Length: 336
Image (cartoon, rainbow, N blue to C red; front, side, top):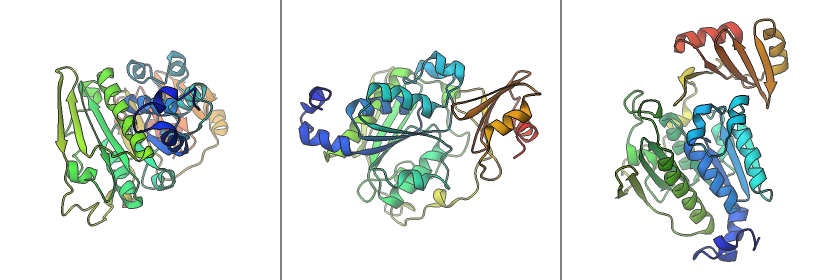
């Protein structure tokens, strides 16, 4: 421990006792994209004893500009991000436990994946998931570190249920779909995501060692060099952290079709929860196109289409004309 973490242990506020707290910590990374890959990398190197890496997506060539845990081979193989990230980080630090979870986070799965963690790190790319994370963390009293980046702009804050403002206090009701830009429309600068994600990782370490967290929002534009700190206050009538109404967590319906951020890809969810035997599905698709099962996913290519199918019934479809076409293709080839 002293050799690997010697420089870190010299930091005021950590020391040997703090390092032992870090090694005992259980942290969940929700999303392994531009933010999540950077924060997971920093936390693994810092020696966080248990990391649960959760992501629904596969590695794409466009990810490599900013997502630091993946390489060209991962993209060519369309490997699940959680699997590829875990493999890479085990090579960085074999002394910690890393769990890879290739799964869609929704109201039916998120509580089981978060309830045994000490801290949650937000690496998501949509407000639907962030508001769900806010609900479950407030409900179970789990601190979480919010982060967001778009273009050259980013922001982050630490949310401690019962002590700080929650996401609903900060932003208000969830923004309507299409009301804000995404990385598909505005792009994203890798150094901006790196600054935010490393700041998130530092906040996680502070929480694990018992140091006072930052209870304000850090906002900056890396391109212009402008930075600001905004103080937060709990909303006296917040439906989540005051009245404990968890409407996002209590929803039972799932979004059936969703365009993935920054990619020419549509995700289609099954109507009901499924547990597929991918080798059996592969046998049915072999006569139609090229099929491969690898790393727990099935990849099917046919006439310009590239379909990645997971055992929970989710599919990522590249090459569809639009969301309706993607749903039609899913029904035709998967049938759920």
